[in-house]
Image (tube, rainbow, N blue to C red; front, side, top):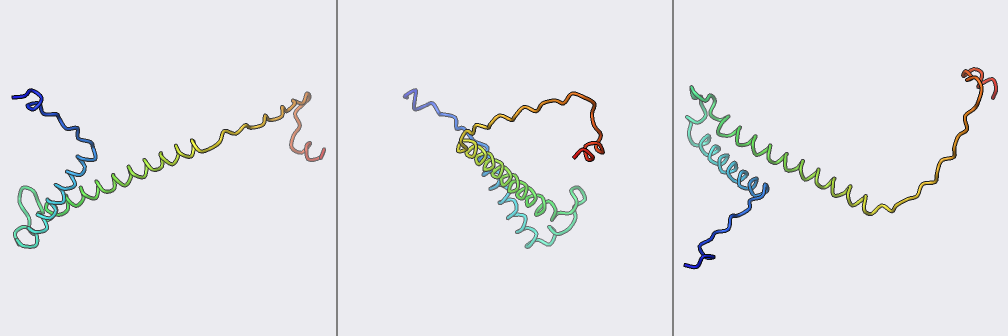
Length: 120
């Protein structure tokens, strides 16, 4: 047997791949939960150990899917904002600002507001 044929390269899974598989698993769990709640009257009741069954069959998978969706939207918004900021920085021409004139300091006592108004 050829040594290179026997070697298997490990796959590098990205966070996006893990999110896709988790989304698929949660979608299947939600579909199974909907089917159970619709077809089995016992799935609409209570269980003494885990409580109200529709919560676990519908509510939890649905809330996990919603959380994944909102997290993805937030990450996309942040990444597009960063890309926009970087492109704005790159496209902005370098500007040379004129130097501010130096203000001279008056010697003498400080005047009150009333004195400044009367002098004007």
